[in-house]
Image: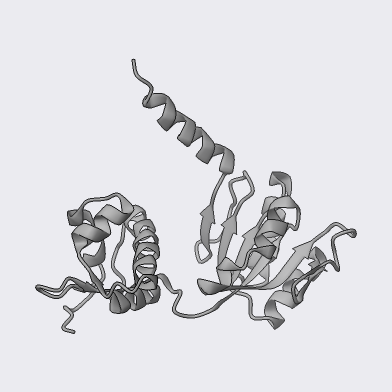
Length: 217
């Protein structure tokens, strides 16, 4: 398939990057149902945006459609996984095996998307040593050697807010390249470390705001 030349490092808005994951999920659903091709209109309807937005988002990375055919789903799924970096397996460490951390550790869907837990950490002696599948929880004091030996690149923080910065510092010192933070705290990280944070209370507030705005006057 002909593709136009691309900037190796396109400047992509965060909102557009987030929509790539939505496109990928919808395309994977279509593929599971045996659908071979789709259009920008159908893809847009599946994720709740416009066809023009789909074409603009994908256009940051190339021209993927074929005249008269649309998008070949197998090809576009492969391309989106390559763009998102999930065409490979990432080794992930999870710090904080409380209620949320336990649920994350037991969820098997991450590995299907290319994210494999290879290390679990906690500082509670009652939790250290507990098994989740083939993994046992290690002590937080062993973060650096375990991360280095197991080739961990991404870290998930699921600890109380007061401990989040300390944990982040340990992960950075161990060579972690990206951190996903569930703690309701703003982390100070070096610029070379990628950082995504989600505060569930803030997200719920935004949801309640949206519902409130929809109330009839």
